[in-house]
Image (cartoon, rainbow, N blue to C red; front, side, top):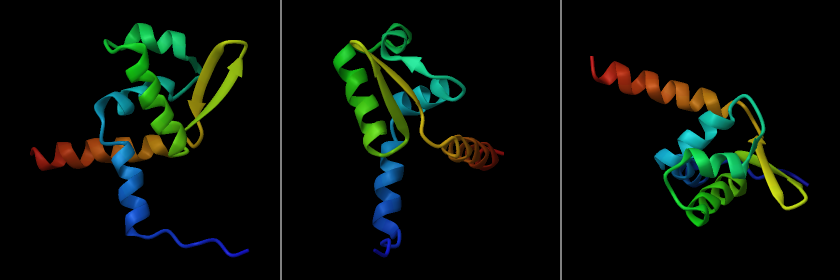
Length: 98
């Protein structure tokens, strides 16, 4: 079966997932290690339900992967190249401010 090519709509949908500051921060925290959802809830000044929605959106976009251990959920980056997008975004913004 042949893979469908990625079009502009696919790219826009993917970038939309990164359009939330909380999601970018989650990615940065998880960048170098697997993190339990219980740890993340302590870091963010948002309620558990809101955090869960952000994690689900990132997981559905294939940015994060989830591992369950008992009742705990652990998250890690599915593809570390997402960090390149964040780094490049920072560089573009910094250059535009010069």
